[in-house]
Image (cartoon, rainbow, N blue to C red; front, side, top):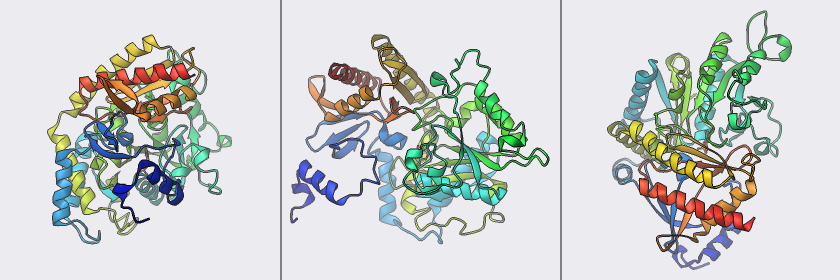
Length: 463
Ligand SMILES: Cc1ncc(COP(=O)(O)O)c(C=O)c1O
């Protein structure tokens, strides 16, 4: 094996990959994965120079586009100045980033709090679990069916898919999973109009008697310490809850002193048109967890914001969840620049405006193809749910075929070969979860719709 990486063909690289790389650290959905060599704006490029329009941007980690010059420059400056530092010492970027985030929370939620850093989403989520346990002394939590919180052991325990747990032993403190208000496919078979928020009533019912296994009616103590939520479900299929759901949920949780931990790892940083998706629903969580777009997918950095009484050094002492790279200078420098970029931009206006345009184009497409059962979105978090001809029965095969056609790079637009990068989520793996760059143009959205329709028509031909 004397050849350098540059000399190797795609097939040779994939052969090495199949021999030496663990597949456990990827989802490895496709047989013959693409190898991309460059990214710019909304596009990825493969080794042959074929351009792929990316409508998922690493599950909403690259909100500000690939190779964003301003954010890359911040990282480069930091590499040349102070690229690494043990986190027992302190650097300016960490302090300024924490202050900016916490001050913004204070303005939004009128709550004082602190920021705690780590490197990955799941790690930050685990840190939030320590905060909850430290405060309540209890470790059982509620979480939603269809929720996704990561793949470390503790994050898997509160992620509803049994598939993620089945080979890893017994999860004694796995969450109690509650149906999310996924109204297109209501767990209780209701229709949104006139259901009277039946799902919320069913949740409330759990607290009626001690025999439903949740609460001691004599002391009022609940065995569950927190409810882990995503305001919009990410991997669950960009599902949007109905107005009033979260306010109603919070009312019930407050009665039993159950905290709300809001996982904004995928929906945070203006994906939905607001800094935090939960802002659409008018409640204040006790803890917010974030990651991904904080650094635009550059040097990873994640974090937790918690109300002061949960996280002050008096109650959550030094080293409670220390990690070598937790507040690393490269991540915090990128994060700080991201926050400056956010403050100087108008994403609260531009993201909903673009989202509205994209949805209108997708709804027109829906009228032409009955297999598109549902199109919806908030900001630039958009969903296309693929069904059989009846517009309801989930159609995973058609969804997979569209993904493969997009990734083949053999679509055509304006006389040239192109590809399309899509991500699939949803309870039946039949939902395209679109998370385009915030800088996507109308022309690029039109292109996205054109490429998507071409892939859909081809896929239907193959079925
Ligand atoms: C809502 C949500 N929570 C947690 C995670 C886990 O984050 P990470 O993959 O960085 O561990 C993800 C990742 O997709 C996510 O979307």
